[in-house]
Image 1 (cartoon, helix red, strand yellow):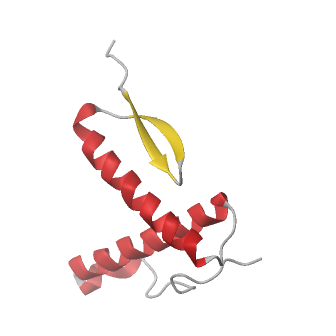
Image 2 (image 1 turned 180 degrees about the horizontal axis):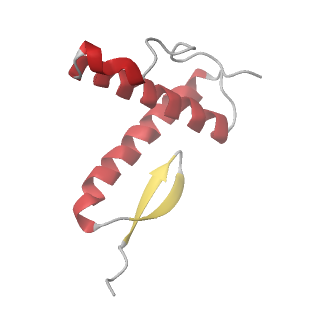
Length: 97
């Protein structure tokens, strides 16, 4: 039986999260956590979104939007059919009440 992955601690919005991660992926995990923390802080600092859960959802939507844009730029036009042309809401919009 293989050994479990070591735990690595990441901080997001001042809260520490222990994450099980293979050693060869720890650097990327730290970069991803730092990026997420930065995005969540930007959203929180606008003062328009309140609550960690809502901030996390908005950050996830913004990051997914960035990923889809990067995908569209790197994939030929005819292969893009699996994603909608434009998201229903623009980036940074307030979530529904």
